[in-house]
Image (tube, rainbow, N blue to C red; front, side, top):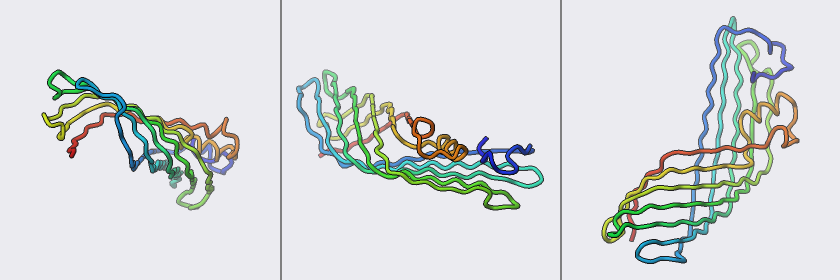
Length: 208
């Protein structure tokens, strides 16, 4: 149940219902990279930089009977901060093939904001609230993969698998729970958000 429990038609039986949740995140990184160990067979380096990040969530649920009712929520985070990481590569005998691993930690200070709107075809605003708070979000990234480079090493193709964990974010289900219980303060009940993303990553690099 995503409607507010104190509204008149919370327990109504609807003939049809549907819901959708969309999540989008964007990052912009500016990095300095250097090596501290290397030879013909491998290299190990470090990265220092800054990161700007956006995390946007939009939820919509619609219920239909004689009339229609909907719940619409947004939860956004915008932040920037420091980034640090380690990476390594291991080469084949001819140096054309390689395997690699990367791990990064980002500390992002920013603002979380959320909105909740419940309405119907008879009353467009049944319940409505919004919330904002400062947040320090920690992002862990881990990527492993393999690739190919030409003899000069200035053209590279790689494919890998990335796992990214966002800590201390506000998730949509936690926000709806906070609205339903009218509790926007206690993080142990509502805002202990942990969100993960994973998937394939491919790159074409031209270096000079």
